Length: 64
Ligand SMILES: [Zn+2]
Image (cartoon, rainbow, N blue to C red):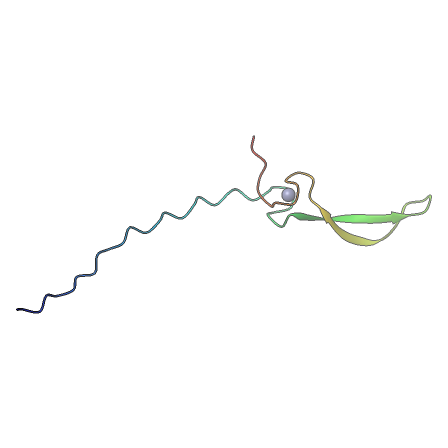
């Protein structure tokens, strides 16, 4: 009985899912920096990251 060469069958690799377009607003981060203002003069005290309202935090461009 001749030893059969084990030929590895090329497994069909699953096609990578198409990368969704990153959200143009948050660049795919899902968060945007919001300027924090306080007082009547709206003095800027800094920035905080906020939920991106364009993609609802998913980082993917909203379907048009
Ligand atoms: Zn976004």
